[in-house]
Length: 307
Ligand SMILES: [Zn+2]
Image (cartoon, rainbow, N blue to C red):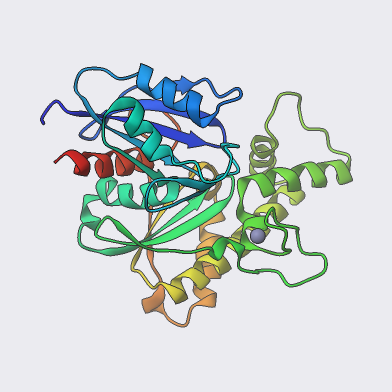
């Protein structure tokens, strides 16, 4: 099994990618042609990528995945509901497959990225396009939760969340909500975003230049992130948090922002002993910006099928 590899498929908001994973080594990503991607065309593409040495297939995807590896609902893939993807892949390739939620894969992978978490309890929080979290122990997800949609701001002026409610944590801490807020605020203030620049990149640039509006957006982010993680900590206490996702990698490294988040979180918790330590999941060595932990987590679950 030393040369055994896993074909890992990642389905996310920005499309799909496929990697070959051997042990902790992740090969260069290959883009999956996503235009009009259907479950059938995805399975055909996966089957076309099989090479000698590949012993199993792992898929990590946004959305709700059943224990049997069916994607019940995923807004990012635009697949119809209840796609039995694991069964379809196994039938087309003859190899065992695992299909899992990307955050669950990330929670599992945190235990691989940080070997000192072996045997320990930790929480995994994702700040990406949305927010998500799971409680883990010894590299296994023990509790899924939807704290991202707990209400942080109770006001008729609270931001509308993509879930339909107002004032959710995700409405203030999700990347997509932040993008919308930047567009709304710059429009209201008559500020133009340079052509071709992502609104969140512009936000970060103006934050570093001390523009009041940009600082305000990050103050609101930090308030909501602190309350949200404190709520999660009260329900699922853990000594360590792993932080992952595109927004965590950028926003939480801006000067002062993580301090604000930690201050807010502390003020919501009842004592010093409740305060967790934070570990940031690093990007993979091949320079790919995303989801190192999810790739390794899903691949490790697939490897268990053949061992
Ligand atoms: Zn919501």
